[in-house]
Image 1 (tube, helix red, strand yellow):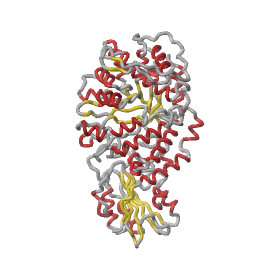
Image 2 (image 1 turned 180 degrees about the vertical axis):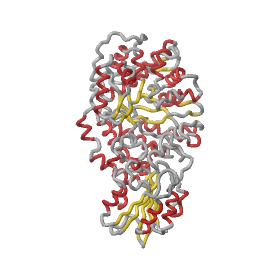
Image 3 (image 1 turned 180 degrees about the horizontal axis):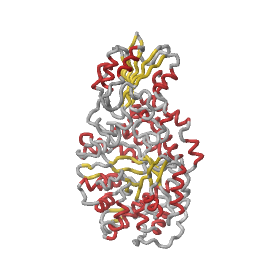
Image 4 (image 1 turned 60 degrees about the horizontal axis):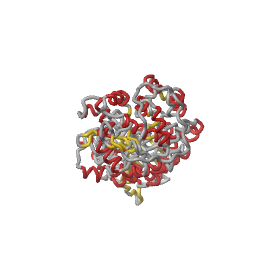
Length: 590
């Protein structure tokens, strides 16, 4: 059998045509707000403060509260002196926006929290019009008038979608990868965003784990190079540039090594393996200047990452010198209760803050419990000051104290989002991200690139004429309407050829009703192209799997087409490595 096996780990729009032709403040312990004074005007520049590490009076642990080398340290100290304890805790709180058919929404409870100064950042909030209104509330309807941070999962593009990270890693093209992050930052910033929860630098060596697509695979060296490139791309040379966004390195630590590939499961390994294999990519991204880092859901040797002082302070800050802020993953402080290390969420809040976690994503436990924990002297207000300072410094670095609306320009949004520059890069990034595993000869010449004079092609498979799934997993706000499907691309590229199409099979179940039509058009054609793989929901968070075969009835479909004797080009688009053991014979690749 003459065949080509052609795998592309990112389902991506646009490139198909070419291919087939081819991350010391004073205290105010009163929770009642004092009369509001005008917030201090942001100075143009300051002489960095100096000091030596202090010991927290409550916990007895070392604190960096007396040490600040940030250029806005005096401004931020003055701000903290005016803030109530409740308002400081608000800076440590990250809540989610929602989405409805009419666009982004924020529920009434969160709006009340925002007006009370109990929210420092929001995620899943984007579009300039929406974020401008939220920022207006923060700047006009709160006592301290501190600007909000807006974050989002910009993983492989925002509205314009580039290859999934695993696909880009296959290129080893660091310049291209950095450019992808640079352009994604430009588009996200134009949509009113300040912060992406990326890069993911988790080393992954179990193909059953569902989040492999977001990282660089199994190699810590490559993962570190790519993590650093993405940090440079997102953050540019200076975060005060309004076309940059903060990176957030995730998920610290060893999230990609859960037992049996089961997402959120325990990680059990030696310290040597942790340090030699799993930690280096995080370190590389931190060394590149990453502004923030996200904790992981898992425990490492029985200690949940969000409660691990060993990870968050001993390694991250004391060994590596990280001076940005640490944010949890979604409700991961709350989840320390079912981990069994604390009895309730109040204890979880104390454990997380003492470990070194600055911001609580969506859990609400800092807002709910930190004030009482200060009263009970379980934690100190100085610890809260330290965490709040780190977050306020990041807002300063982004220029938000100078101009809270600098990312909120509708004219810029219209000009940048889905622009030709970004769409062109999507194609250019896809080309080196494709892995060609086999290219057999037919009548004395390699099957690919396809001959311009080919007469007829049968295009078969669930990804052949499918826009949304070609965007791939974690495609943020990718616009499926901009996707050029494989069928559309072939017809544009080969206008003189007869292109016949049949879906053949779906992604789930064993329905074989479409086989007959697929076999019929295969027999009528000179060549078969099969577009196989996953839909975008079959990999990702909470999508680990025990069966790595092609999903649904696709293996049986391959066998039916193989029986026609026609040469087959296989396009496999998936977010995890698929062994294709159920259909190895027609492609002869394993």
